[in-house]
Length: 218
Image (tube, rainbow, N blue to C red; front, top):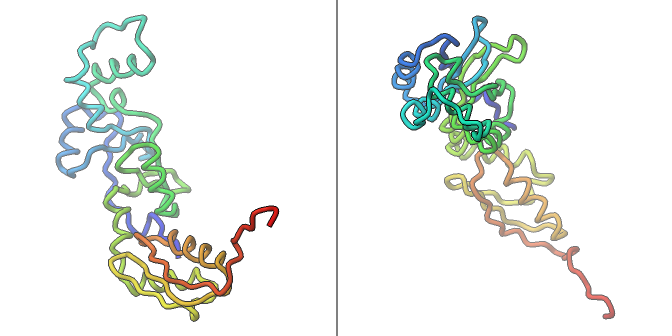
């Protein structure tokens, strides 16, 4: 069973309007103890995100009123943010979002690829923000009950009755016998991608090795 964003996400949409002033953004970060807030338009559709890094440019960027012709596009944008006073001026746009039906695995990959710690969750029909997915929400899949995790593991195996499965703190040990070594590899990989599995200990014994490569000339 694939775990989706709606199963772990926070139901509070941590957001500010585009015209929110600097102080209001700081207050929202402090109130919810988060590192970023979503910026929404009047229809509650995400248009960007303001992070602590964006706000820190106010102190870190020494150039606020002049721009050098030698500045890169990124440097010019940093200068603009450093001079900004509203969410629209400070935000990074567009907002990177997920929907409640996005798999947690895909959301985790997106967080890693984009180097973000939280994602706005939007309604797939209206586009309005309905919640927030934090890194800690994603990590909750690794605290699933052992019986629930074992049931999902057995569901991905072609012949679960022939194998013994134990789960201890997310580490899955599989033992038993199968006919081919290639089956061992396939079943271990199938178990590894189940949400909540931290590691797989393979104790399965194959009857025959169908992966043996015989050198030419023998």
